[in-house]
Amino acid sequence: MVISAFELVLLTSALLALCSIVYYTLKTGISPMPSSAKARAEVWQFLAQVSPRPKQTIVDLGSGWGGLVIPLALRFPECQIVGYELSWLPWFTSKVIQRVLRLHNLKLYRQNFLQQPLPSADIVVCYLYPEGMTKLADQGRVQHWRPSYLISICFALPNHNALEKVKVSDFYQTPVYLYRL
Ligand SMILES: C[S@@+](CC[C@H](N)C(=O)[O-])C[C@H]1O[C@@H](n2cnc3c(N)ncnc32)[C@H](O)[C@@H]1O
Image (cartoon, rainbow, N blue to C red; front, side):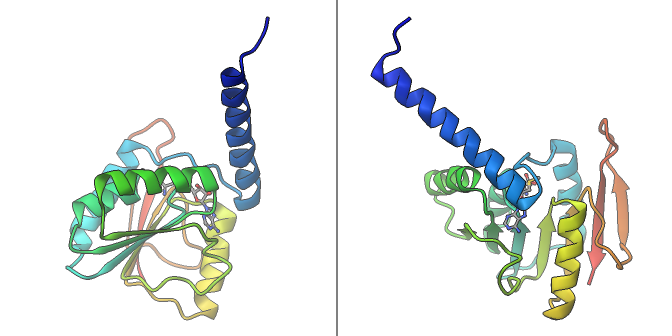
């Protein structure tokens, strides 16, 4: 079987993309798996309670492929939406979607939010992992980081009492937490 140059380029690109995702999954501690539709529906419920006002900033820490941050920018056009994502391919994909949809209220940074001053925000959403939540709580304490609300999919913020915790009716009964900070 002879592989054409085109097939070779495709194959190499797919392999590089896969390596990049595996590399950043190992580096950050979590894959860019998007949050489930049911978990996102719960995030919308909490956001309805919190009711973001125009000009407020909503930050997604670990915005992945844009599964949450893009709908946020569409749903709250008068708010400033910010996403931080370290993994190159998911970040690039969300950038392309942002351009196509002309989302001017959305900023997407390819940065490690744990290696710099935490972004100022009114509302923070995240879907991280236990160690990431511990690091976030520690760094937040040192930097006196105080967004008004934090909504976390799946994992609790250590040493904080959630205002509300809802279990989503999915296979894993994924919890979604709302914190008033
Ligand atoms: C499970 S995904 C969540 C994606 C998206 N927020 C959603 O709900 O669909 C978590 C993402 O966080 C990113 N991430 C984890 N730690 C990070 C860090 N310190 N800085 C930037 N991105 C990080 C990972 O690369 C991954 O893409």
